[in-house]
Length: 216
Image 1: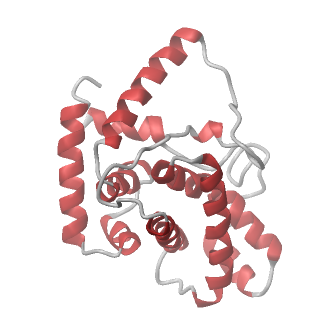
Image 2: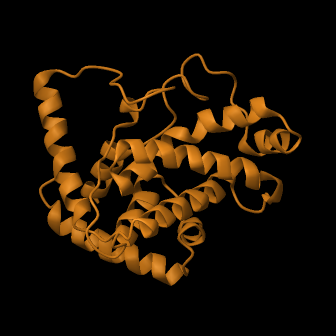
């Protein structure tokens, strides 16, 4: 589906420039090894985990919350919760799946505290992975040509408008699947629902997005 590839290519949030796996980064260390080192009290290993995953965590939060300051605060809260819960982490699940579950809970707790309608209208503010700075607030990593930027901006605006028409549950499901690339079982674990519910939400979201993004 071309429109799904367009969503993924426009909204993909990966490691930040300079993070693990990026230019000038140290040799890749697996999450499992870093988690083991964290459990032994290695703060440096936890810093590597944060650096490796903070771009995706922040972007997932920003996609749901919109407000930049609240997104940064929630991202910090997520990693504090991750550190405190690491002794209880079991390697039967992928670390990233477990971390996204903590992120999911933090976001929905935040929305409930502010009495947001989690089944209704919630705006998105979609950030490029290049727009998330390595250590502070978002700054662009490169400048596109005016015509290129205009074209990309129009595509992103169309995608943003289409995503705004989905409920938070359907939006989160499609972002976890098509942008973050998670398996159905991982999405079910993160969203605390059945595989059938995940499939139903993805079917509805894809069907609606295909109609809204028919020209992309």
